[in-house]
Image 1 (tube, rainbow, N blue to C red):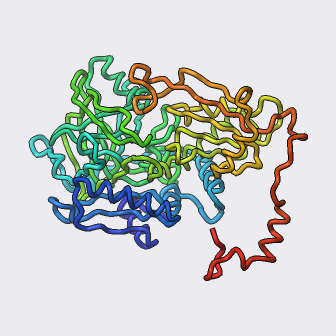
Image 2 (image 1 turned 180 degrees about the horizontal axis):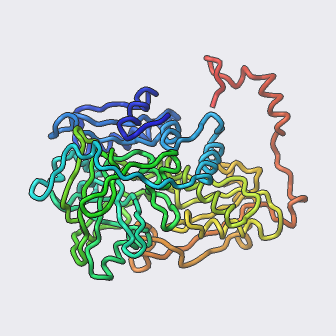
Image 3 (image 1 turned 90 degrees about the vertical axis):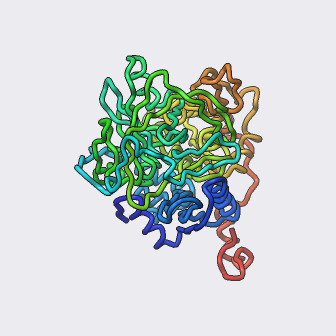
Length: 487
């Protein structure tokens, strides 16, 4: 289904019965806990996690809204990514559908326009006031209110000219300044450091409410030099409409809120702590660059798109597990690792910390090749932990099956290796402060030994033929009172 912006998307989601409106919640430690409990309780019970649209927020005018859990369901994620879900069976089928979609994307250059709904309200100079928006205090131990959790931080490479979007957390310091935290090595960080090294201010804009597709893509490892705007246009099949901003950076013409400003070398404020995707307050409090805000644009009845991370599972792990799995799979194939039968980043690992790769073994060393490639490819290199390679008879989406393979096909002395001094960052809770920036990877070969593949003990379980026969003959044992198959 085609849609033009977040509001069109919300109407479709509402028509699908996957949107709930919550009225009267407090920005201060109600919106955050409600959205977290909404995801975890519905996820635990195997139910669809609805998107929540908060309105009539305490202390703010009706119509100033906050949207959370936007991409917490397969249906909504498929809608944003323009996926045909009718052909995707199971989690691996969905990952495969996303992989095929992403592998065929041809970026479409964005289209510049003169105006759009985002121009309905423009505050400049003394009128700039971030506190006019119902910015949530998301987690109990956060160091402040974060306006940017599902946001897009926009920068331009000063040497090469290309534009990058990154989902980096943005703390509201006061009415006219915001935090500009970026993990080292990310494209936005590289852009900022190039400006600072030249002694120049770094232009930066932040989109607070966008098409959910842009949110899904901005947090992923798109190739260096490729703008997420153009890449998203390739997924949609039509160009993203942009307006050139006051600081020269483009923003979506149909965005909800945009802040424009610059980051000046040496200007820092204490930022954090903030509950992060690892499930910890990993980065504590530190002095980080700030954004001096020159202009704020916003639509009538603006919507803050929130995607606060927390201990998995959460919305971010749903989105990132799917897309990162698909992207790693594609990278392995591009790197000529043969017979990859699937890749799955598990939510329990916060979408980065545990990656499982299934292969059909073809030669000695095949499993190690796949593991090492998966540990260091672009989509998996940042802040990983465990890479597990299994045979193609293992359901890599089922952690019980994966752990069984690890326990019965992996001899720790021979089948576990450590890759040291890999790319990490300040959010990693296990790494001491003095060693942050580096971490190790555990390479776990949980495949049958290649030289014993044919003689390895046979698995003790019913064959597929026998399983089908039982299900057909004794179907009454495996259905509930409504006649539906039991989970």
